[in-house]
Length: 453
Image (cartoon, rainbow, N blue to C red; front, side, top):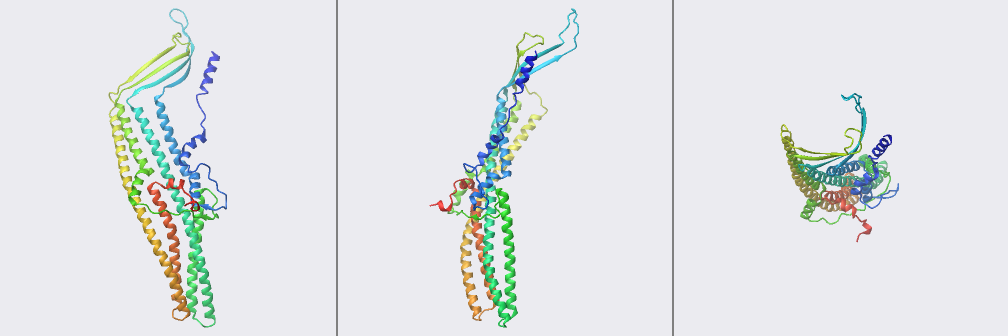
């Protein structure tokens, strides 16, 4: 008896199994992985936009949390599929009772040990299990597309911060160059005042312009530090001092209708919304299936038996359940399921209109940026010419120092606007790709400028 008990405990110890954590993580990592291998970064080396995006997708914890949500949906799907399979349990039962004498004078059995293998299977459950499998299948696909959509949003956030660093650094260079010229003018104006060739007003005006430009420079330098700190947070790399390389050149703008058609097919959140509708519809069938009868089969096989009758080696039980009265609970479950289905339809409908609006707005924003770039280049050229004329007129005594300062400020503002718009245009184009649902594929197939035809 003891040896059989030990065997039973030995078998029970193997009922559990260890979970391979890395294999679990790989289930969602392979969905968001953009390259074949690990993306590494050497501190202090140049950082490209594509490399920054790859590092962010690889290291971001929030994206990994969304991946865990997808993993749980995959696990739930497999668990629901397992409902179709029988369950088998090893059930040792030891009983002990008070020994009493029967009417014939013999003593009853006071202890017994039964070792039973119990099996059960659901033969029919009103198609609830089938619909649960389909529901969980759509939910898993929904979570996957939500994961990919989150990844594209993260890519765009990285590009926004990357271009903010480049924009601020370019502004710093423009301001430093302008400030150097303004310092020379201030020294010249102060010298003229000292020898009595100009009034103190000239030096004061120039000094005020220098101070204003230096204030703007300080703000731009702070923007660089703040943006680089955010970039380090996103990429999980020490990029505070890394030189950034702009390897992105937007292609020609496609036709709007082509982009709208592409968005209808490729937007991951649209796919997720459609899958949410399908999952909700199968939930309705699950609720309705409660009206059907259910049939199950249970089978017990005795490996060892001491209880009476000890000669019986197996027994089976076929059970049928017919719902007759449920106090309206099934009806309320069905009403709730239909409500969830209608909500999913409304969410999908609104998202379809939102996607179209986002693509149209992004397309118009890119077009407007292209137009602004053209006009800003003209404005910079004109401001440079106006400054040269103001300088010559000032030297000839035909213009005041204020005219020269105004021309210098106009050129500086035009240069800063041009620098900002150049990076705004690239970010707006990437935003358009994200709204179309093509940003992820674009990053995967991205080629550096020097490798393009």
